[in-house]
Amino acid sequence: MMGAMLRRVTVLLALLGVLGMAAACSEKQAGEIVRFPAGKRPAAPAITGDLLGGGSYDLANKQGKVVVINFWGSWCAPCRVEADDLEGVHKDLPDVEFLGINIRDERDKALAFAGERSSYPSIFDPPGRLALKFEDVPPNTIPATIIVDRQGRIAIVIRKAVQKQDLRSMVDEVLTESKS
Image 1: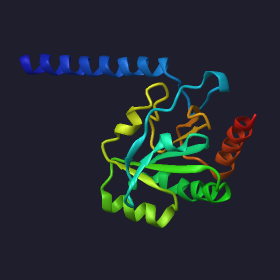
Image 2 (image 1 turned 90 degrees about the horizontal axis):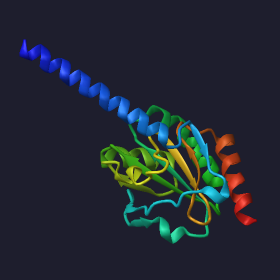
Image 3 (image 1 turned 30 degrees about the horizontal axis):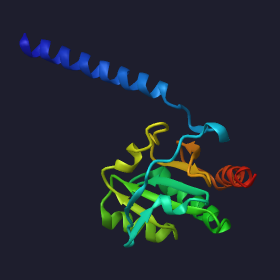
């Protein structure tokens, strides 16, 4: 009897937790693609970390440039699909900074994945702490891509796999408005 009651309480608490998370998510910006008007953009958080290939990265050093940040994992099938599209836009736009953030992965698998698919740097962040820094617009799916404008503000959040033409269009949009 006590075991059944304990299971019911556990299920009820779990349900309340899920409902609470859903309510919190609805208060944040929701949707697969979130665009912020230039005057209402939240500042990008401090993003620093150790790169997969060695060295370190600090987003603050990229002020004045448009930066595309992509959250990925070697285990993620949609990440594999979008990798060539990200690399294509990266090669098409040499004045735009690209950064990968690898999460929930093993270093060897992440290195193999990145080495085959991208020429831009990636931070190794297995616990996903950097994604948690984006409180106003959490990249709550993998893959997720964030476009940061020249002023270091979040312009667009994409919570799905990207395709080259769509990503290029969004980056061009931020590049164009950032010049004015």
